[in-house]
Structure formats: structure tokens, C-alpha cells
Amino acid sequence: MPKKKKRTPLQKDYQIMAKSKEPKRKVLLNATRAFLFGGLICTFAQFLQFIFIRYFGFEESQAGNPATAVLIILAALFTGLGVFDHIAQWAGAGTAVPITGFANSITSAAIEHRSEGYVLGVGGNMFKIAGPVIVFGTFSAFVVALIKLVIQAIGG
Image (cartoon, helix red, strand yellow):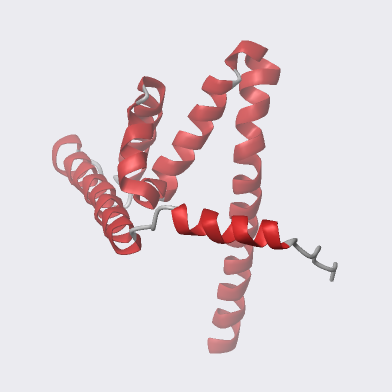
């Protein structure tokens, strides 16, 4: 473990002063907002699923796919219009519900790097963000499937 560099008395005084001036975080309010907005996104997704079942003839097992696609399209659209950032500023981690947060991060990378071209700018930078998510998601699914197989083999 590397040794910590000793701070001078002036640096210590500055740290104390800076910490006293730092605004206090409203943890309970932020957690409540995140919970409510994340729940609102999930409720909206459930409503979309109901719409696809009721009015478009999807079966319950299939209705989640178009509902998810609508969430992705809306998150990408709101990111492109600059609305998602304002929502995320207020709702915090509530917007990081996996589908909407992932769509926002991909779209943000595409918008930010579009001047570098479609292949190296947009495509390359989108997958710098998407790559680890896809790899770890796939790996996690593999591990869960192995665990399920082991449990089924033991259980009979």
C-alpha cells in the first residue's frame, strides 16, 4: 500500500475550510426522488406492456419486448432533445433504470462524438460504453445459467 503524502498545516486548514463550504447533500430527498422516478419509469413500462397486450394482441410473455423498445426510443429521443439531462438532474439515480440509463449513455456518446465520423466517432465511442455492459451482462447470464443447471442437477 503506498504511503500517503503528509499534508502541510496550510493544506490541512484549506481542506477543513473547503469541507465547511461544501453544500450538504440531501441524501433522503435524493433517494426519495430516485425511488419515485425509477418507480414511475417501471410503472410506465408496465402500462406499455398492458397496452401491447390489450390493444395489439401480444401475449404476456412477448409484450415486454416492444415495451422495452419504446422505453429505449423515448430515452434516446429525450437525450437528443436535451430533456433527459434535466430529468436526470432532478431524479438522479432514478433515471438509471437499466434500459433508460443505458439508452441515454449510448445516445450521449453518439451525439458527443458525431463530428469524428460515423464509424470511428459514433460507432466506436458508443461501443466503448456499451461493450463492458454487454460483456458483463453476457458473463453474468452465463454464470446464472450455470448455477441454475447445478441446482437442477442436485435437486433432481
